[in-house]
Length: 396
Image (cartoon, rainbow, N blue to C red; front, side, top):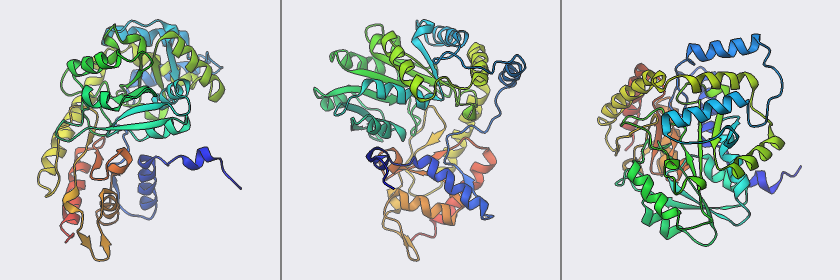
């Protein structure tokens, strides 16, 4: 009963682990408020649901092209042109079972054993694990709270070696909500272009949840576009997490490689999901503004409530739906026989005592932080902060 070294080296997603803990506590009859998963609580927009129903009635129930229906890939290309000013053809688009599979496809297609991948921290939980699967080496580039959790070209340059093959980052960022400006992206692109074998995976899944203006894509710079893989999807902006629909746009040779990889793993994603995605791509970007504005109100509420909690050091997220406070003020304190040595300990204490779950910063590269998802109602956020404030007051 021996598992492979590959699976033994892989860590479980801590966001999924905390969601499971929430469900376990709820099953015990405990009133849990879960602020762990990055899952919008809004329903999928009606036009998208209607498109899926019609697809069922019209018998779109057969295998599709591995990369997705041509009409969908063209709709994605049209969306990228309309919203992002990016020129792609349909054969440069690969539709997958969520943006996570797009990232996995890319990493597995580009990374050989021993290749190095630059990953700014804080980072989304799966980046490191996908690099492990490819037998690459993650090189962590830490971004500071003072820099609003964004890395500089100088930091990246110091981390580049002859083995560096890929840079992976997200904007807006999970877990910090930080958003890179056009000038910041251009400065990074101007660095990366100096290294002919170095590529960029730009994770833009939170594009539609941006509180400071127009979303900026790395691939907008023509001089670097042929080395950029843009990843996006419908789960966050269109509240379609369970539909499992993501896409990437890439140079043709990379898109073909990802199609080949996906053909051996899953083939295409669900045909009905594809028809729902096509409708989402055809909807004007303004269709997402209502959810975006609701998230902004929740962010402002959560920040105002957290300011009344001693020891939470905050930045102001500019996108996504997370707040990422530094909580080391509580390290060294305890409650009875429960000592708090790091954010993971604090996270478990709050789950058990306040009945609120979130994700410790260890999942994102630094166990001095907690990630709170505010993809839930204002009422639940208010109650969650009340419970947390009361529980933290017990630590001495």
